[in-house]
Length: 127
Image (tube, rainbow, N blue to C red; front, side, top):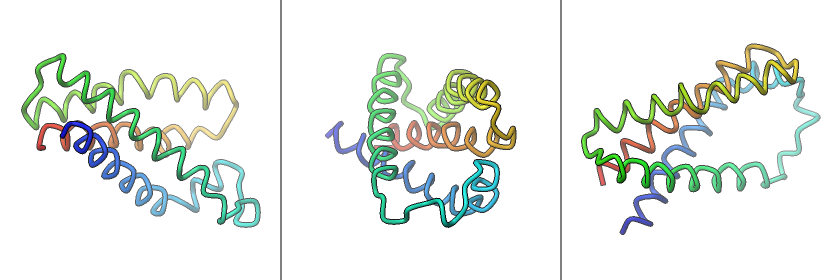
């Protein structure tokens, strides 16, 4: 059943990501230098890759939580927040700054892995 839990956790985080980018879509596109005309709405590859990425992250989070003996929602939440804030975000910030991209992308793209990893962690310990 662990595989099912991993898939469910990944799907919940992936749906959060879809909702997140729907809310900030216009600002994100502007900061990314994209327009409605430059995006191919029929290209499913970004969606498939992001879902696959969520599954990989959920699998690793399952491993980390299990190895650390984390079984409570609060411990899982803080683990997800901590890994998102202190492992993923610094690398992402480097990519934005070294790539000379709009600094607004730090919070726009940074919130997704921080909140997403927190969601995955919580879902994994709940089931």
